[in-house]
Length: 442
Image 1 (cartoon, rainbow, N blue to C red):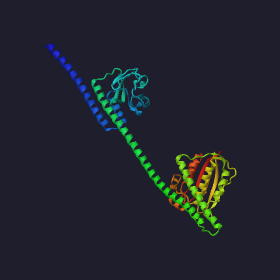
Image 2 (image 1 turned 30 degrees about the horizontal axis):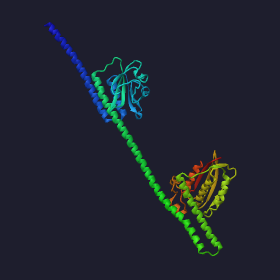
Image 3 (image 1 turned 180 degrees about the horizontal axis):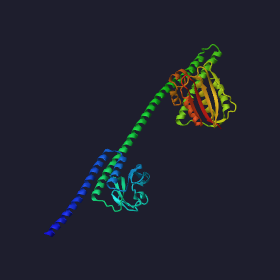
Image 4 (image 1 turned 90 degrees about the vertical axis):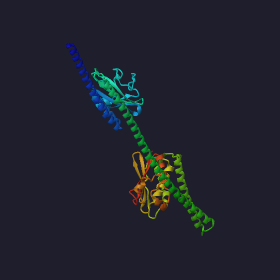
């Protein structure tokens, strides 16, 4: 009986130990399930990959008591795995541990979609900071979804550490949750980028459509204005020619005056047609210039008598600079002459009182030619579109003063093709304007 009692006592003691171990395992299992449930709720509520990684790393570090841990995610368009969070290491240490994709350990064949211990030689020197001086074991935990390795964690565990079944089950559950959350975050980021790109394209299309509508309106206004401008000199030519043909003049002098007016109208019409042809050449890329060293003072001497003959309001004076000691410049002489005559014609046309002056300034490597007038000026808003095609400074001025508004557009292209620049400055309406052209010194 005593022997049976002792045997029963040993069995009871063993049963008590087993019960205690089972209670301990059950408690740990219950705790892990609670943690995983909380993690699942957090991961389900976030669409940011960085937050997913942070939560996963906290669980791994706290629940499995690893010495060091780093989590990588697939980045850079799938070109590599980038470390996103680390524990037990400085940021400088873990942030330098970039690994290639699709296999982060190309030197050693691994089952990338399976958790496993990493052999000491599989990572070479790349993971030396995680393994540490204590020679910890490295445990690989992949986050795989639909045969795509979206990321992984590597834990540094003590050399004698072995996983319990409940630990492996918890890791498996955490893997699935993390992989799905990373995949959802990747989809959300991709959709967000597509949405942002679509919004940018929509805004760009709206700007393009607005610009097209404005260009169409300006073009319609330009065509109406050009038709009027072409009709005016043509009507003069036909009218004066008809008068001469019908003999409706008193003497030869009056006939000569009519023919002179007809010739002037013809010259004006030719100038308008030349502007339109030049614009067509600019549009087709066929406009050519031939820059060469040329004396600017000679060119100004050629321009002076032509500009002096331009019509202007009574009392408006035209001043010229001292043309001595002006160096040669690299230009196409005929094209620069065209630009200067256009600027002077505009300045004289838009100046009712005061003066128009031509000034020359020398700067390092360039000559600046200024046409300064005391005319009607240009508003600040109009200055921003003055050098655009089919645009004019003020809509009403085109009717009052005439012109197609192409002169400055053509002049801008010509100066740029010759390596120079053109710009306009004005303090506003009624305050005059200054046009500057620059050209390189020969």
